[in-house]
Length: 429
Image (cartoon, rainbow, N blue to C red; front, side):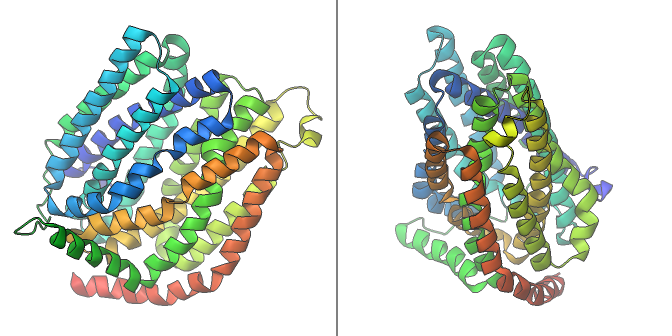
């Protein structure tokens, strides 16, 4: 990674602001996970809280994508961070008065934060490509991934300490303040005004601009292939990490809050290791080959993971320590492979998509690959309640292997397209 990026004021302030808000958000997400499981003890209810976020995403992603390209991106991200500061601050005040928050209130909080995240993500998608050169995009994305994952590494540990000592209220107060600090940091960033607002805002203008983003996705083989494969991968893999492993560690292994926090740190550590040690390889290996290797490695690791929570394995140990360590090691491997693939795909996506269309294109892309995540969370969350977690994880691994094999040819063909893509980018420069 190129250290000159760190010396750029705009890039450094952007990363700093994102890191602060990420720390607060992940601490709150960690604390809410423990809070909900303590109240209910049900993987189904826990999964439903995660899954409810798809409703605003389905309804608002197209609107957010177009608006993200229409309006000043700097003003948008600052205002949305301030809005999050207010929302979470209100919830902290309610918790202080009542001494608790109910499950329905948590549903509302998740929906509100998802709405702001949708519009924030649309505006933010073009910020890094706007403030760094195209030649530096891989390094910028790698460094962004590194710093954000350092935040994810620290957040569970801090969350476990604060939640265990002071409860959910203080976690929400800290998260609220983190968004305020992030907004202040973003106020000093110079983001080129490359948004393209129509002369007259109308439904017709909205439809025209939305179709323009969709057409880019349809016409680009790389993007359309990754949407198809990404949808299947997210359907089976996301529930493992958002529901399955949390349920196994807390309810099957009966791990402590501290052990749970350390496990989350292990996942984040894997995502830190990838950009540090693999950025050079990402530049050398063709994206199709890299993605196929990463995805098939994830699938095989998941099949191995399925053995650990089985009765035969658990019955061989007097404590949960060995199964806990084995789960942590395999999860670390999955995190490394997933991060390598994400950095590579994200960089190519930034290179092939015009900045003025980045908002609407990225939101349509993200919606397409995430729309089945809540369905998978609900389905697999229900399965975790009624059958052995080993069977559920094994099903996920088998589905993933079939999907990756199905798209192996398409991934190989991407390598033939990649040189053309990079050549076009060089010609544009």
